[in-house]
Image 1 (spheres, rainbow, N blue to C red):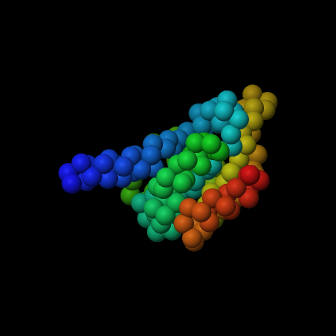
Image 2 (tube, rainbow, N blue to C red):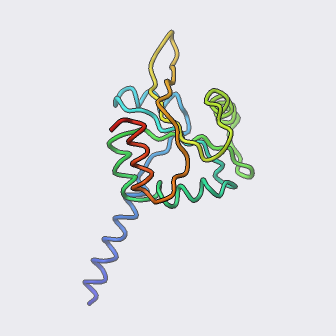
Image 3 (cartoon, rainbow, N blue to C red):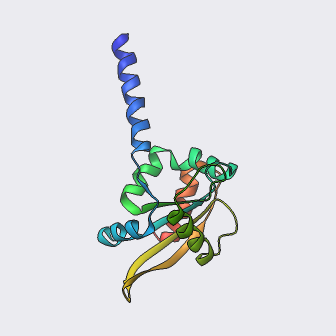
Length: 152
């Protein structure tokens, strides 16, 4: 009986670890370099991590699932662009996030933009592919929408 419980615990633990292995970048320049090297688009997650209920719900229902983790590893590089009310942030991240919010005309949270970064004129251009937000129905529904945007 103890062996069965141990195996069940280890199996559930590995599922949880898989969902937590994701790397969310906060520096768009660094994430863009990785994306260009791996030939993957960026997933830009505009969020209010410490106050936005829909953002927290999206993370719980989709982003922290094994299905999402598996999909991410094959399809995108993750970038979190956070607009917290209580959590301190470095000034350079605040400025970067404000510029991207204006560039993509983000007016509400959560907003997710898929973009292809490319080097141009000594800088990096972010070419928009499409956007989405919270989608009810769990990871299957959200991923179906994301695959539609990415045309997969």
